[in-house]
Length: 246
Length: 51
Image (cartoon, rainbow over all chains, first blue to last red; front, side):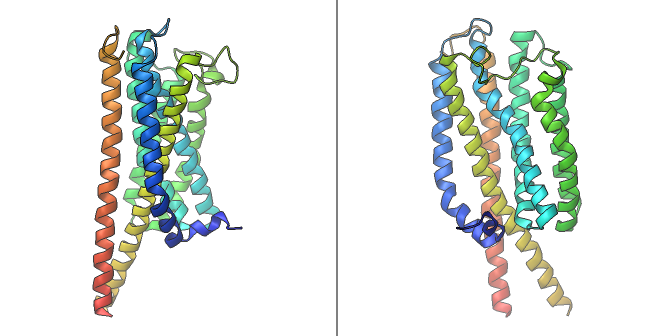
């Protein structure tokens, strides 16, 4: 059986990414287009939120991906720290800008939804605040990668930053449960039927979640391939400079 | 419908901002991918010629 570790080989990773990327791109576009069209045009207004409930199709999937992106970066960082496969470090680096955009979408749509629901664009609520801190961690993570020239040292330091930031990723997910206060409601999806989102919104929401998850996977594959190329460019340029000096 | 509710403008704003951010990210990622691939090919060709 083929091991997962074969993808630590950059050539194997890129070949596989080339093959599956178009399929994931088509599938993600289909899921997003169907879910958003269904949700925006063919679901009724909710009793409490009225038609602002339609923001759920962007807010919930992007918030989920903002947290999951950081957890994916955590897994990739741990693989780098333990096994020193540089493709995993590149994957973590590639995921960060996607995580930033997901966090930004979650915060912007949350603010827009908060206005009619709570009467304010922003509140220092546990979930909102932990999301803002997560956003700052993302920015710091990208900045740290850019600030260090040596890729291996940058991967080591950003991996440690990622471990620390994971506390806030988990806090963002469970902030409502931990503090049980603030404006933000609990999770929209639950196995408890009473707490789960109403049936009429459920399927388009699941489609949007699948769409956002697939967009994330497609972008991480594409950007990891780019990072692998960039690293190869840097090492070839160093070799060229070495040859010129010799 | 999206255009007929009390908060339609806010809903439309959130869809517009989100989709713009997503499209911008996809566009930048594709542009970086094409640029780096081309740059790598050029360097590899140059090194082959040197060798």
